[in-house]
Image (cartoon, rainbow, N blue to C red; front, top):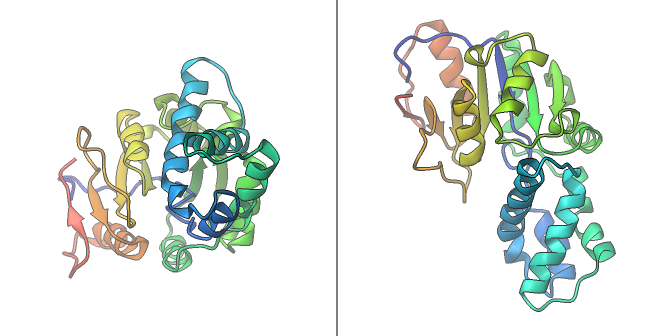
Length: 244
């Protein structure tokens, strides 16, 4: 817990894995990857790697293009013959992923408490809007921001700083909530506050603070934010305070 509690002006949410459950992708992966649905985390990591290749080489491709190319690469590295059309079909479920069970209740409680909420995702704007609409989450956000508008992928610090400006706030007045250590690292280094959602398989980056609070679910984080604002009441269970 931070020493001087202050309500963030804007709370940003990552989308994939933080709000939306990627597990349905395993079935479509298994269909084109000879039953290797277990390669999903490797593919996701490879997508992040090559999105950053685009950013550091001052280029840009939408994340769906990168995702398709990376699936072909992962397949090839495991002796699986997969063409771009097959790879594209395998990732189509990304547009209709279900929300994690804790996502909508947490967003509803935060909005009711007066928090301004926004998304900040590496997914293209159109796909992100479809994702949130299909998951029933669109109405909770003041703005739905995608890096496609700036053509610079997270975790580049410029992306978080740009997002704050879009909401009329300085980075110090913004908070990033994400289930990715790299996302929290980028937000913190851009001057934002960060809260880490320790979804199964997610770990904070040990060389950077995991933010001011870590919890396994969004409702615990929601209660932390509300109770912090209302006077810093100690949470009964489920959260782990971290010095920022």
